[in-house]
Figure 1 (cartoon, rainbow, N blue to C red):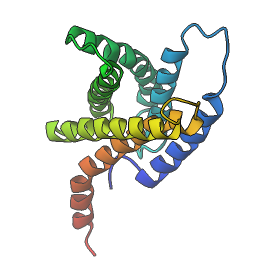
Figure 2 (cartoon, one colour):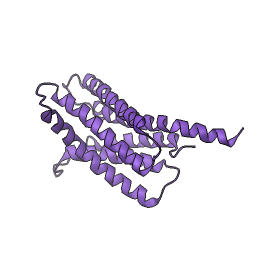
Figure 3 (cartoon, rainbow, N blue to C red):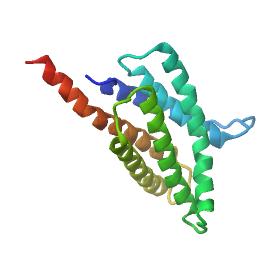
Length: 192
């Protein structure tokens, strides 16, 4: 049995999606930075779904994990925007590069945080899998969101949340894949 109850985790991700779809269209003029808020919200929702599906863990870790993740997620877009500039990229691909690099940096940092808090036995190849899957999910999400919005001609609530939902599922799938050998070994020791 792994550290995370995956069926419960994916149900909580579904609930997080509903919450995201309710909050996404809201527009408050008093928000100082809507961009940071939504990325922090994306991280907080996934972290909450993860923490609520844990089988064990001290309460203090659960309480501190979500705000740390939210702060990390809120900073990721700025890192993603700064990296293409630092690399000297300048063209129409800067936004895509920013999203892909932000996804890679975010997945790496989040994986290290998850590993530190909950999964100390996962190793570097597991982290590389998480980053690869999250980058692929981001690229697929960009393509789907672009197509759903008529290539930017109209706003699309579904198009706005698709990259996030794909990223969440890619990361969670990578955790499940990382834990599978442990779960199989534990089941073997239980006997028939």
